[in-house]
Image (cartoon, rainbow, N blue to C red; front, side, top):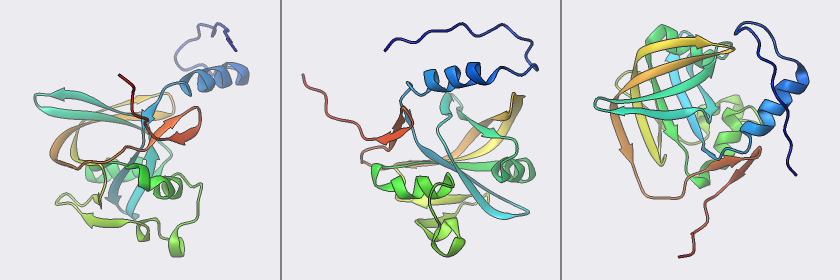
Length: 180
């Protein structure tokens, strides 16, 4: 099915209509993204959220960006501590992703009870067994719409082999081998 509708050109701060918002969300759902948990520590202790809006910015120096809803406690903790960790999830972390997205119950009500977590030198929780981890210091932040874009310089990273957890069309998925 091919669905197309123009979005009205509005001033950056003006709200869009519900049907335009749904069209945008549906169109963005066609993008296949890796699934991460962005974690930080602040006045509320350790916090984390499932995030698919993460991207590399630069290799010289190593930097990446994440987009966090400003009302999320993770944004508050990043503001306080100026550090965060991006934990790129492996396919086996689907339940953990759901816990940090608020779609599944955490063991004993503590999200960090699920998974094997350690604390980084900057205080952010790091998931042992994540496909990759990126411990970052905030270099720049930009408020855009309902979110803040945090650009972080990577202070330490790690990785291991495995299949990533992916998100496409509002569903979790795993990559399939491509035929030659």
